Length: 319
Length: 319
Image (tube, rainbow over all chains, first blue to last red; front, side, top):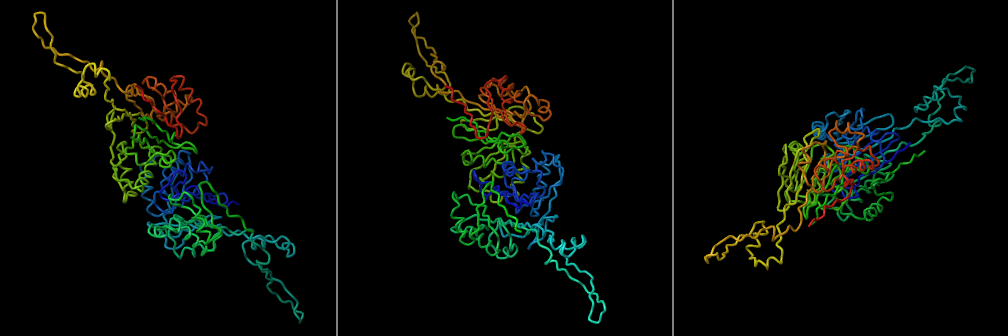
């Protein structure tokens, strides 16, 4: 029942020897979602032991090079591996030009089909829906068309308290309805004062008989963006946020000018969203130490962590 | 007076966690030549401390992804660094489409000009010529149009033996001519048997008065290719070869089919070319150990070495 976020690239536009361009893997149970695909992603996936075969869906935030320049290599190598299943890419519409170029120049004999899902929205929309996971895209505020993504586990079936199954002599049919969330209504009778039999509905309330086996978990990917008010509402109550944290407060003006965030800006978003934890990333190359970056965020939102190449952040199951 | 070849990517099409796609730096004194530019090149350059600013010329062998997918990222990052000097790229003509796409999609505000030099030849041609270095392109035999490159230090000016300057009372003009390689011809006279003065040409032969301060060095880049006879003639006497060595002999048929070489094929080329040393690279991902690869080559050409990420191979100055 894993729900984890592996950061493989935490650099901003200017990668360094240690910080790679944006690339991350969100694991929801058995499903792997690749989020952004900067240069070197395929080598990072190998390095951290991520199976290419398990990636069926790639989500791209925007079409700046540091978020997409790893795609051509990854798509090529996946084909060398002989994949046959469709691969789905979610990205702003402009990606179709990149895809056309790739297919024309490098796509000869590609072993699988690429299904492109252009994203276009001004508020959250459902863009992916499976049995266990749904993904919403929402607009961010950057220099070019950019989207964030909210990944949500679906509400699990409710469990019925075992001792109440016996106490109420619940049938298999009734148990199935209870698991779906319905109340149970039984026709029953009682003897009235005048001795007549009166029929009535006996209601067994779902909330009295069942419980959620766990709380569904959620994760929001919010980079690149400058802070803006609506964002925290769109991701209200999210368990974990990965947020643009290009600069410290000292460079707030620069952050505004370049449509990026400071770590404090990211922390304010996490606080307003009442998030569980905040992961900072997309660091400017000017920082050798990220201590100040972290401190400034933690002053606003204590449960803040720094992303790092190869670190996996878990959201644990809450019963 | 450095003359060295730094290998930063020794994988074939399928990179691994440790082996990156093709990318190398040849240093000839102060000049740096980037040869091929697979995905991750810019991070490898940073890792091995190579200054982006010193790269003015990039040579691309062919347009397979594992030799070019690092270009977009590198070109972008160089621009972020504020370069203003022209950058020269030498590649097969098809590269113009890649460059057009890059400029259209990612080239807005590029801080410098890219000068593309399309290569087209059926035998060695001079494609780069500076005061100290010349580069020849020559065709290789691969599945697509592919070129190798021969880098040659130019012949240095000759030095005049100091003790002979005095002995012959050489003038500054004569010393300059000797350094250029000319003989010195002095008008002189002698007294004939009949007492008459006869004029004659006194010849001071260049080879008697001068010496080469060092032997010019050379390097040949030969990947991707299957072995073919003319190649060793084209690079005859070269000091160092980097050669396609995708497979061991066991997979010779596969090598032929895919227009690649075995390490033995590479060694035969080095032997026939009477090369100084051979560097093997472009290894198939199937090899965890390269011991057999090396052994099979050394049986044919003993001075063979394995390329590795971050290894620098020197050609020392020979007096």
